[in-house]
Image (cartoon, rainbow, N blue to C red; front, top):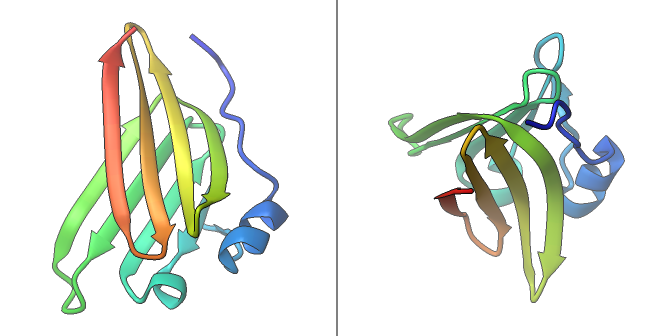
Amino acid sequence: MPSEFVTPDPQEIVNALGVEPEITGETQRTLNLIDVTGEDLTFSYDAVGQSVTVRWCTPSGKVMLNLFREGAVLLRVQEGDGETRLVVEFETGNTSGELRVQVFPEVSITETSLFS
């Protein structure tokens, strides 16, 4: 099992999304994407804990999605065809997967998890 979670330089995230990752814990950074998407969307990642959290709420504050995953090995910003997304690759004992959080032009979240 890989022992490292590779994350982009914070400036790369700023350049792509216009939002700076805030330090929200000893090793955790959080992106508050409400100003970017108009949606109450936060994306947190912990390089040491190899985890990510995605939280998406309605304007009234009701949680629509609260997703936590461990085993993250790579976070990258993907841009193209007028779309910008955060892509996280995961590897655990016998599974591998990918979480895609599209930020532009509208929020969309997809995940796959497969036996490896």
